[in-house]
Image (cartoon, rainbow, N blue to C red; front, side, top):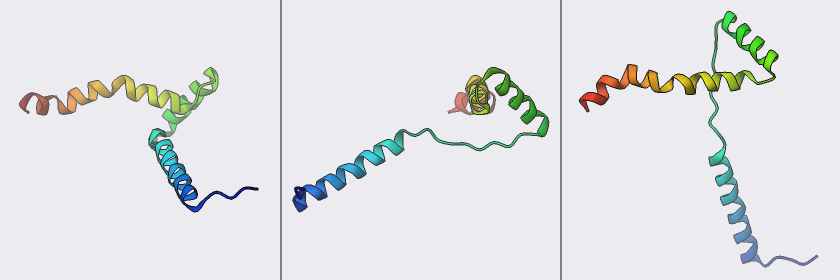
Length: 81
């Protein structure tokens, strides 16, 4: 087995670190949510019946309503600012 020169080994280690950091930066952020039992049951039932994950539906609900929430809570601030 051929040995890698020390400088090349250092470059390879730096490249691996850079690639790993690039990979980590592309991983979506995770958010944990707690729901009342009845909402959790409804979400679980929907996920089971459709074959999608609870996370899929939680993400869809947030994306669907985020702009409206921003308008409701930040609208006055945006208009002033």
